[in-house]
Length: 225
Image 1 (spheres, rainbow, N blue to C red):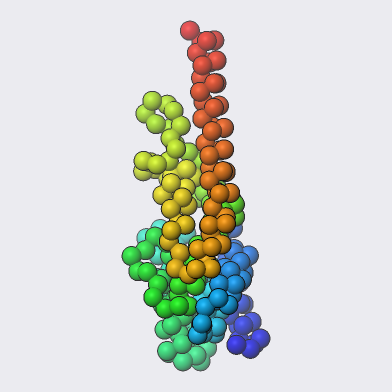
Image 2: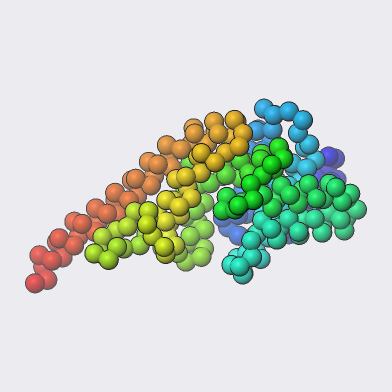
């Protein structure tokens, strides 16, 4: 891939970014993660991998505006049309489309090609560890979702059995469980190195919030009788 082609992909990506949690820096981190993983694998088509990394979130805006839209499926089609309209071969466009459409965690469409597996792992690394917790908080704030929910008895839910969206629910539903979902050895190793930071943050946050409710309620009930 030459610099002109890279710039074409990058500029299109930049024109599509409109989400603070999935901004251009997220794209670059995913790309850099992917290249780090790729060097430990063989027979990688870097033209496909780099393009797919740069364009994997180009339909985030469409999903944000309409929750029924899957950004992975829509992004694959959007990338395919962009590539075809810019003179790229259909086979190349199809392979990039496939990588993008199989990169989503919440999907029954797992990646099969090596480039798709690397993109999946590189993207998931950016929701692992401390960076994953930070990005999840940014996203929850952007869509006006709370940190946690309360149980019927008024205590703080840890998110495990929640149905309503919250940061704790996101942690229990996705962030806690992604570490066994990596496809590459390198991606798994990096994720495991980051895992404890996420566990410690969640446990500390839950403990602090829960402590406020327990201690504060006791004091309140002493005053109002």
